[in-house]
Length: 253
Image 1 (tube, rainbow, N blue to C red):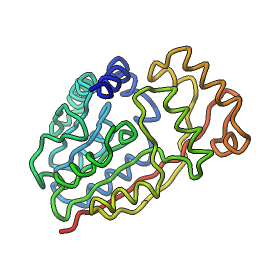
Image 2: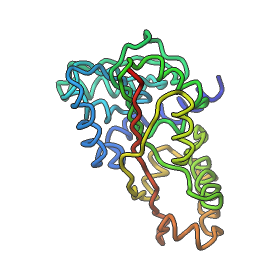
Image 3: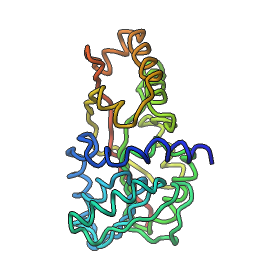
């Protein structure tokens, strides 16, 4: 599929950069994620869209098994090596898309996903699969950038994201997320919200944004209304801040 190819073309060459990226490798949310998973003894965890594996590394010490799942083979090779380096023997990798999970029904206690869902082509299909593979009484934790809280802000955010990375699909707003989860019988709540600082130069370098697209991003920021620039706390070097949330959902037992 063309979208799957766009994802692998965007992330394959940059897999090592995501292992060392400060945005992805650090954050209080990793500690929060480990804490919620730790509440389930001997949990079997699926890290959906694992990228370079930081969520997997965070929960592995408190889980019995972690399956790191991603579409990009190069990312999975990075996870394998980093898990070995960190002596996390309970992590193993599987390749595939979020919309077609090669796992049995009710086979995981937790499904977690961090900074991946905005790349999924079919969110309904992915959530249906998540609901299928999580056991009754099991839980889901999703961490992602949130869409803008009003149309003006949201339109600029989606445009920036798509210019930076052609594999971007959508940053969903909190109301959208809660509605999608509810539709799939996974009642969810927003457990935490925070602002994520984005340093512009590393943001475009990490994904290898083409020069013409970088120029378009600069133009878009320059012409953005003051309300947009203020909401995202745009700085003179084009660094800015994003809204991020952690959502937790439970499957009925």
